Image (cartoon, rainbow, N blue to C red):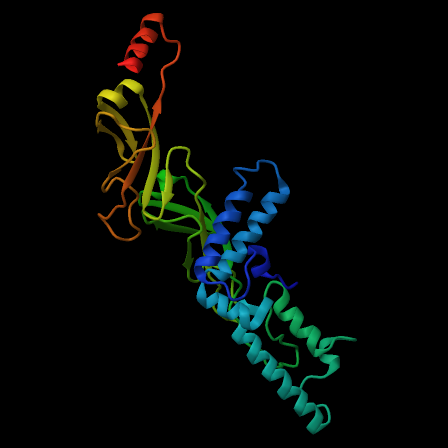
Length: 306
């Protein structure tokens, strides 16, 4: 497996905070998201690399393993044990004149380093078992990375979802409030283990593209609504869309364009906190009238000169 520098992919250094990593991922993921770059293979490839890097570095445990073991991070502990066994066998060969594994066991021209590279480089091998019954180790199967696209409204409600992974049907309930880039782990739904080892895990990353109506900021939502000049000046009532339908909002007289009001509890549901919601922030945009009649222009002139 070729070494992949996840820090370089996200454009952060190795001392970056978790918040730095999160911000870098969100910025680049939006830029290279397939929905914003249709039929762009390079953007699709970059997006996959970003998700892979984020899956590792956004998880403190995985990040620590990656920092220590590099490309072998998924099998770090097994890799360390295997290296220790390699050293022991080499010492045995030196001490007892070739006891333990010999070059012939691995095939012409193959040495220990090649064996260990093959062992960890692809589908996840383990110590082989020859017809002479040499020792074998149990290794956890490789993890599987999957992505699930949700729109903002789907992410705002708990709902079941069914997948098929490795021939197995997996049914999960997606909790309301999941966020873009969030990852969940399903233990034991990855690739089968080696030599009787446990199966790997399934990691699902949620992709939530930009919504045309709402901007999500944490658990809050932001939206804009246009009001006509007359409502802005005299006051009135407008309908505002929320995730749960429309509500009537009173507009105060002399409302200025750019004014923002808060609708408490009309934002996004808080993840795994039933009954808790963020707020909805509504910003007014005053729409000026067009195609005025001569009479209307006269009235505006009177207002101007009064």
